[in-house]
Image (cartoon, rainbow, N blue to C red; front, side):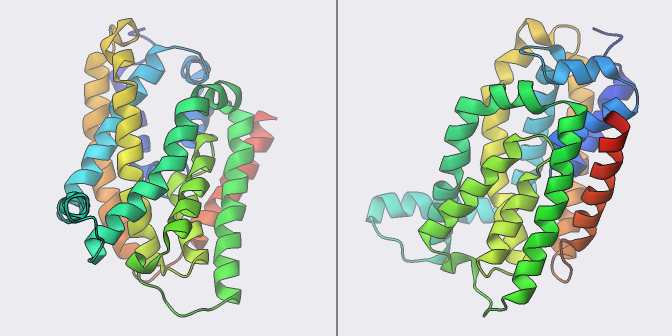
Length: 284
C-alpha cells in the first residue's frame, strides 16, 4: 500500500482534486483519467473497487476542498446560516440571505438523496477510463450547449435570490449528473443556472456555495474509511494530499470568481471535448 500511494502521487492527485473540483471539468473524471494516463493502473483499479485505500485517501481530499470553500465564502456562510435560523424562529423569509439559505437547502436535497443511494453503484460501474472519457466529452458538449442556449435566448438578468424554489430544485437535480465520472458538478450546475437567467458570476457563486455542503457531507460520511483499516499506511499521504488540495481549491475558487465576472464556459467546454475525445481514443 505504501508503494501504491507514494507521497509524490498523493501530492499530484491532491493538486488535481483541488483544481478540478471547482473548474468545470470534473474532478472525479480526472481522478480516473490522469492516473490512467500516467500508468498508475493500481490507483485506477482502486477507484472502482468496492472498498480501497484510494477511496479512503480521496475522502481527505474532499474534506480539504470543502474546508477551502468554507474559508473563502465564510462571510457568505455566516449570513446564510444566520438567515436560515432566523427563518426557523420567525417562520418568514424576508431577506436575500434568508431566501438564499432555503434555495441552497432545496437544491442540496436531490443530489444528497440520490448520491447516498446510488453513489457506490455508479462509481463501481463508471469510474473507469473509457467511460470517464465518454462522460468528459459529454460534459464539454453540455457546457457549450448551455452557453449556446443562453446566447440564443437572451433575457433580463436575474438576481440569484430571485430564483424560484422550484428552479433551485432543478439546479439540484442537475447536480446529480456529477455522480458520473466525467460530468462536472460545478459545470452542470452553472449551466442550469445560466439557462434560468443568472449571469456567469451569480451562476458560479451559487454553484460553489451549493457544492460546499455536498462535498463536505460526502467526505464526512466516508471518513470512517480513512480512519478504519482502509486508511492504514496512507494517513500521512492523505494529510499531504489534503493540504495541497485545500491550497489548490482556495486559489482556484479565487481565480474562478474573478474569471466569471467577465468570461464564459467556452474554454472549459472546448477543453473537455478535446481531452475527452483524446482519452476515448487512448483507452478504446
